[in-house]
Image (tube, rainbow, N blue to C red; front, side, top):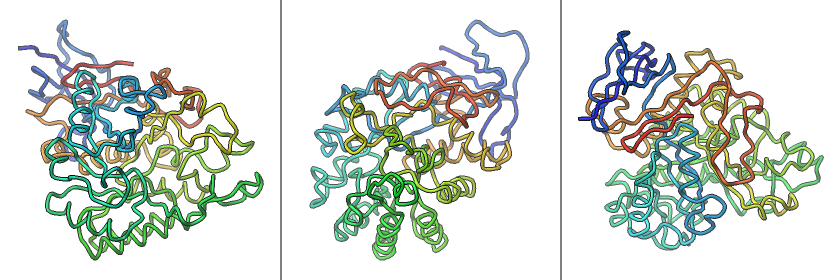
Length: 428
């Protein structure tokens, strides 16, 4: 029986009896056999010394686009999962908006099969509607049986009746329904946040009203129909406040945001900086402040990479036609930790929030009851090791030209030392 001892890591798992203490995690044949206070005897050849780094249950990324199948030369599953492992993620939820989209049980099974050899695994998200056309629900039962964990068209649900039917249909199984918080019919020509910077650049703006309109409508439908509703990316103070009220009223709603919206504002687009063109767009400083507050107070349930790689042809073109997106999956942990500290969080508050947003929240959204336990004896080995002592990013394994984040990026704090899963380990 293969045994590995991960020695002297500081356990990051609020609520655990050993939280904040140095522990040894003993794994046997890919499962956790023991979690015990650290012993300081001689190391065995198979031991892995964690050197006082923080160790938590593996981080999960709730939204990434590897453009595979379809435009895999922009990324592809293999390089995407490799970059995710660099970023500390042990599982990633690829979006369903591939070509063809993930709307058949065979698509889910193929994704699981193709990802099986990789250290970082996948969380299958199936298309909510057949062909992502928003007309007819996909075959939810068969997709769930194949392994789907959630349903999303990776876009807004335009027809209210479609959202109502989806919420009602998925309610008995407890499956979350995703709806993008954006009304495409409101300011459809907007290419960045509507504000002083869009006016200075002479660009059509997209205001926060487009987000709030859709959030309020979808929350009204959720109140009527029941079920579980998830907004993958919320970007405005007003949108957060609407969700905060809905949660207080007992609605089953969760929400996330991207790491980019926590780190940057629309001022980063000055000079027509196409590297920062994303959708939904980077918002105002007030919105960023509200997002950081929500990350600390629990209104936000998770932070996603929203990894959106471009091909060179999509990247090296005029601002107006460049494909929106940043390929930053390798940078989420240090960027999130730094953003929270910059907002005034204490060291303990920042780490607790990082755990909530990268471990607890994603597992509550996608995971089984067993997976929601975190690090526990008998569970499969799935850990992320994170250090707070310096800001270091590895050179991303992503093939995309729009990775943006590097060690020189301002505001980073911490480094991912590595991950371990039943399929192996990756150390930066």
